[in-house]
Structures are given as C-alpha cells and as structure tokens.
Image (cartoon, rainbow over all chains, first blue to last red):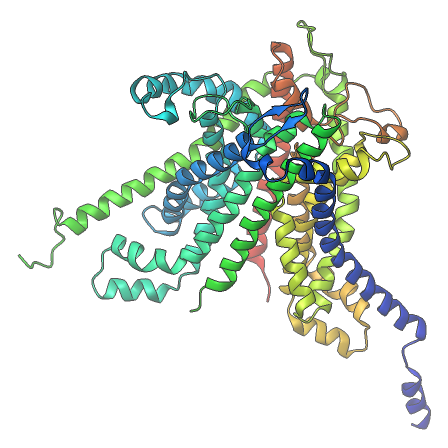
Length: 315
Length: 297
C-alpha cells in the first residue's frame, strides 16, 4: 500500500515534457501571428514601393487619366473608374439573379434533389479558375454576344453607355463574365442566410394568412438581409480584385470612354498587363495603383465583417 | 365571394405565380454558365488530348503547324502548388490550432480571426505584387528573379487564410468531452491536440485543405510576374530558381495569341485543369455528404 502511494506521487510530468508543451504552444502562437505579419507586410511593402509615385503625383494620380511612360506622366483615373463601374454594374445584375436563385433553392417549388443539383451546380461554378472563364469568354461568349451588342448600339446608341461602336473586347463583356464569377458567392451566402431564418417566422406569417411571396418579401428576406448584404459586399470586394478573366476580355485601353461597348481598363488588369515589362517610375506608379486597389478592397471587406457582426441574426 | 377555395385570379395568387416563375427563371439562368463552360471545355479541350500533349514542350508561338505539348506547364503547376502547400499547410494548421485550442476568445484571437478574413479578401494579384516587391525585384533568393519558388510563395499567401479557417472551424467542432477526457487521464496539452483533437478533426480539415489546394492550382494572377512562364522542360532542382511555366499562365498567354495552334493548346490545358479541379471538388462533396450520414455523436 505504502509502495503504491509513492509510485503515484512519483508520476510527475518531466521537465522536458513541460518544455515541449510550452514550445508547442508558442510555436502555434507565432504561426497564427504570421497572418498579421503577412497582412501588414503586404500593406507596408506596397505602400513603400508606391511612395515615389505618391509623393510626385499626390492625389492627382486618382483623377487624371494620362498614362505615358515616355513622358513619365501617370494617372489611374480610367482604371479606377473601370474597376468601380465594372464591379458595381456586375453586382447590380448579380444581386437579383443570385438572391432569386437562393430563394429557389431554399423554397420548395420543386423536389429537393433538383434544388440540391442546382445548388451544387452554382457552387461548382465557383471552382472554375478565372483564367479558364477568360478563355471561354474570348472564344465562346464574345461571338455569342456580338450581334446583341450591335443591336444595343443601334437602338440605344443615344445613351452614352452604349455610345460607341462595339469593340471586340469591351467593358460590357467584362461585366458579364464578372456576373458569372459573382453569382456563386452571392447565391451561396444568400442561401445560407435564408436557411438560418427560423421556421417559426415563416409559420407565423402563413398562419395570419400571408401568401408565400408576401412571406418571403415581408418576413424572410428582411430577416436574412444582413447576411445577404455581407455576401454582396464580399462579392463586391471580389469583383474589384478579379484579374484574369477581366484582363482577357476588357480590351485593356487606357483611353477614357463613357461607353461600355468600348475597351476599358481596371486596376487589376492594368497590373496584370504592365507589371512584367515596367521599369523606373512606371513600377512605382503601378504600385500606387495596387495600393489604391488594396485600400478599396480592404474597406469593402472590413465593412462587410462589421456588418455581419452588427446585424447578425438574433433569434 | 369569400369562398375557402383557391381562387386563381386573385391578385395575391397571380403575384405568387409570377414571382415563383421569376425565381425558377433565375435558377435556370444560374446553372447555364457552368453547363456551357464545362461543355465547351470537354468538347474543345477533349479533342486535343493525346500522348504528345503530356510529353512535349510547347513550341514558341508563330509556328502555326505544331504547338507541341504542355509537359513543363503541367509539372510546373504540380511543383508550384506543392511549394505553396509546404509553406501554407504547416503555418495554417499551426495557426488554426492556436486559435481553436489555446486562445480563450481574447482580443488577440479576435484580431487574428479578423486578419484571416481580411487576408482572404485581399485580391490575388496583390499577393503577386507583394512577392514581386519582396523577392523578385530584390533578387533575395540566391540572385534569381522570377522563379517557381517565388510563385509558390505568392500562392501560399492565398492558401493561408483557407487553411487557418478550416483548421479553426474543424477543431471547434470536436466535442469538448474528448479534450477533458484526455487531459483528465494526465495527457499534456500538446499530446491532447496531436493525438486526440487533430485526428478527430482530420477529415474536415483535410477536405478544406484539399479544396484550398485545388483553388490555388487554378490561380493565375499571382504567378504572371512571380513565376512568369517557361517553354522548357524542368529537369533538375536548380530549375526551381528560374522562370517556371504553369497551366494557368499557359492558358493566359496562349489564349491571347493570334495563332490557332496555341489557342488549341490553351483549351487542352483548360481541360486538364478543370477536370482535375472539378473532380477534387465533386469527390470532397460526396465524401462530406457520406460523413454527414454516418456521423456518430
């Protein structure tokens, strides 16, 4: 009996094991801090590299559209305008389409397996690499829409947005391919938020005699609104930073035009196009443009996260 | 008038019908892109598949007759994604372990989780710009500029948030009873994590990580000015420190060439890329559905 007790007392943890425990904990701590290091590293490096251009052009960089490496004059207005217009317009098309699809998936118009197939089709669309969508856009989508664009120009040419002869690659094509890329994001987030709305809200609405769509519009959508908004903002961030498909189809022209049917530019397509061959102050100007893009997407993303936290469902 | 029967012409019923068909229409539009993209890739890319494709180097554009194969790009994609995984998986899993197991929801972990979400939202091309400034233009890696290694590092920045998030969420799903039981019989914290919690969350973490790798394999923007492109076979270890081709950049470069032969090669590369990414996705989906059904808790 006495012997056993001593044995029990002796079973202390060895110093080396304690050390391993502490080392393990601190290693994971360092690894998780790496996220912050990388994030701040990106912001810092891009800012430092753009400093030369920043001090030379200041905020004028944002509002002039001269981009001339020979004369050393740079302004990114066309690209910034292009980034905002393509992402906002594509979002405008995607929101009703994505939310409509999400409602289709979460309601019971059709048997469950059909809805599941639609849901996974939309999600698999997100897995297609952007560069492949760009290839498809060049060789399949562009010929398909050519006649439609000619029609748009002929009949709506008096609207500045369609005021120019349709070019082979143009901003409108970029907007359409962006819709394809944003659709999975908006749909899956809207679907998740719709699914989270408690069943009793729906039953209560039905109980007082509301029709199905009255219920959807007045009860379910408002309850899911914050989640849907956050999804929309995430999609906006994604659209602004989207590079490959847009670069391949937008035509890459720095000449400013109101028309969506003429070639355009976005910040990311400008980076993809020029970074490889740039030197001297052009590199710094490109870094400046990259910095603008980063700030834009950071603001949108942070706002989205704030929105989720502030208005998350409280049922 | 106030009949209890369903009245077709009532405005609420007409409106319901209208919105229902609108929603069905949205869903119909939403599935069209995937069908069209995949069909075209299967037809146009599938027609180009032959054994030369996998073994030859691509010929420089301009040579209209024969475009060659995509061997260097295929190997390059494998190497670059492997490098990215080697960097991102340990860092991500380790960081995720800290967030889920050690941090008690304090300000630090809140900050890191916030950072993970922000990093996930950083445009992929910015990761390329960052690595360009950090590694390519400074020639910090043994004097080499554009290299497969730099490309892998750029991709790892994109993978990192995915890996951390899936680890964090996978570990959070492990019931606390398992941890208590392990700690209760005297196991230390790291033994508990490595022997108990990580293995029980293994499947969900692995699924997330594999999906992250599949996504990274198709990323192009971070590679175009970090790894650049190469037409030549990868023969030795030192090739890691030179320009390296990848399927994604090959598609980008050759889709914009005016020559038909190069365009065909781009379709073939898309075929291989899309088939592998989609099969990984579908497989993990089936696996997840299977796990859902057989879950024992």
